Length: 279
Image (cartoon, rainbow, N blue to C red; front, side, top):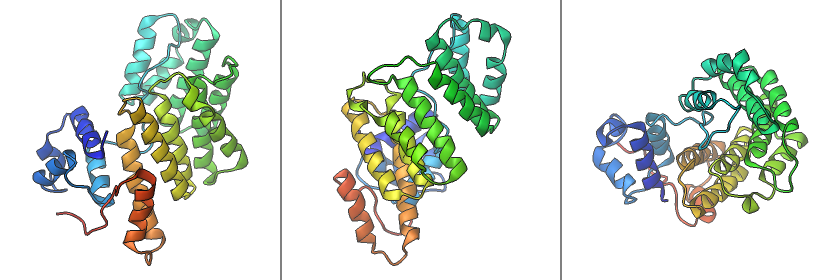
């Protein structure tokens, strides 16, 4: 799926018209041209559009949620709260005795601790407890030759929180990244696997390894589109635009064509124009 089509889908998902999306950013005609892949926006314009569409670098909802217990209503509640990014309410809900008592097996225990970690990280900004519960989630996982998607999510989430604390990719963080990505092309496809590439790229972005981040985004976009999915593509293009901006600021003397060549090499086409901001 091309970038314009991805932006159009994100706009429709946000329930916005072209006029509402373009207001004070660019003309509606330009947005229409972008959505129809007739015009490639600059990084600055793409960032503005992504922000208007409510995209965030770190607020991610799962494509498919996991059962935390035997009570269907509890599972539906968790999915609804996550999709609405109501993490404080999710944290309160997960701490209820009835919810905890409904957990019946290892898979549900693994999912419960994963969601508890997400709620603590996003809702309470409690990074230490979130990391601890991710480790409990991993300890509850069934050992398999090819790691299941939830195990990969817990690994890459632990690495992401760790890099936010250290602001550098340490050997232990790199090990978690490698474990999350290992054999991913052989895994049974689940749209949540798209997240693994994105969060790995985001980790390198926080460590200012922008080229490595862009390469992982390219790999993730190819992985996603090869499975006829568009989930996480808008986030990937948003992060790519942020990378393009950072690369420009990193070396003001670097020729614009050289920066464009980097993305052309990674994606097989020129992803961003390096012209003045569009009116």
